[in-house]
Image (cartoon, rainbow, N blue to C red):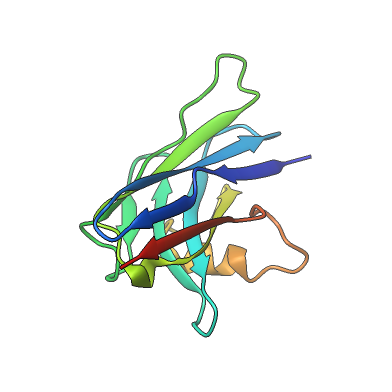
Length: 137
């Protein structure tokens, strides 16, 4: 069974940085598309970053130049693989619940559209419980 766990959120001041982690247990980090989307009260869901196992990354215009997504770092026994979303120059409008979303053997190029598709699945598959990021002005 695939389990996805986000960590690293918190409360910071505008201009500061945070690094979110996404750990995936239960599936091999091959041929993947992984990314992040966020939900904030009163706002539409926004897909902010994606990356494939080849390292091709895409970003939303709202975070481009400030956020950096990494590929999975593979654990020695392949049991717990982690990737990161480095968030710099944070703004109050970045305040949201952030979710890591991942899929494997996606038949189309990995981009924000794929992350949107994953985020729209019901039941939830494959994305985590989310982590809160709060940025104060």
